[in-house]
Image (cartoon, rainbow, N blue to C red):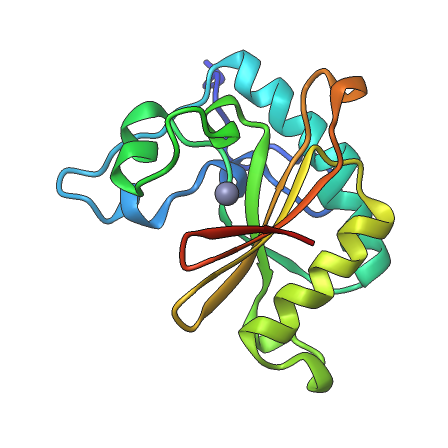
Length: 166
Ligand SMILES: [Zn+2]
């Protein structure tokens, strides 16, 4: 029997269902937390990949690292996510460029995040695009509504919890 959730399932050329549902926190918890998406979440992840992540990946020409995509309620609370986080719906991902793949001129966390941010605003269909920064860590949060005609095209920056418009 084929499992309903196949982590190796390719959502697009460069993104698998498994990486869109992986959570380091969930995997390293004792016991591990499953973080299993429902069908509606997979549909939302597919939409996010098709409209945002894969177009960014294609134009950038570099592998994108997904730090966090879909989160079940438990995982979302474990990582301190907002109660209404779009990660809960499969509509959001936190992304960066893995260190090994960063271009020379974009080698730092901040430069890599800003590079992704610029490609995202150019090539992605997004609801919220957020440059996030906590301590030395920088990443881009990008969401795309399943009802993508309602995307708001918000551009924000969150630095150590403080929100500003970009
Ligand atoms: Zn996020």
